[in-house]
Image (cartoon, rainbow, N blue to C red; front, side, top):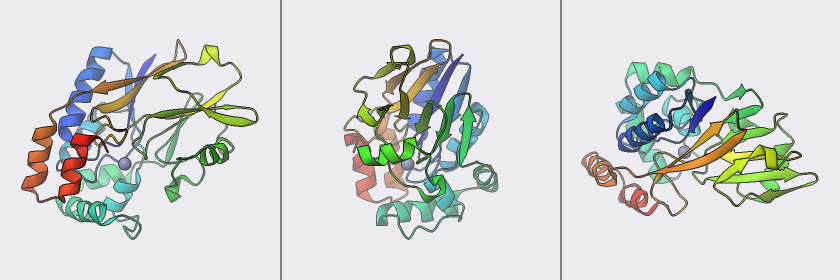
Length: 243
Ligand code: ZN
């Protein structure tokens, strides 16, 4: 079975449409979403509708939670907060009720899916260091944990007793029979690894393999829409730089 794992769409419809077209070419059996469908971008309702139609499930992200009012924006930076305020007003009832039903985690065979971290998934911690990863490996039983949240695609391996970076854009589990992995699938709508192309992961359960896909989309069109709704200029320029 082939499955596409997408995350952090952030209401970027141009990016989501380009990724869905790429997924179509990959001929997957299923698409799942790790959350942050909304926040930052100009098309929360269109993106939520597409995600609902095309994905088997979507996990709740911190921007989703803030947009439906279950998470305070006190810890958000000023740009993110401004975007959430706009999003909250813009969302229709359908989008709100969809986001409200999304769970904090989901198990897919030997994979745990969360938005941020397996440890306290409702606290929106980040995995940015080896130490963060080490702690989190203790909080899931499955072999693989799929995450989003940082918008940085990375595969972190665990081989008793320590963690390491798997520095490749693909992973075949057969080559690592004693290892477990945390895989960050990257971001569709706001990549931050200095590559402005959308990012997502294909997992092939038969081959027990994972690989990243990078997809170009119409960034200028997205930026024009952002300007029209007067979003902060930082949010408009960052997508072109992939930061
Ligand atoms: Zn995000």
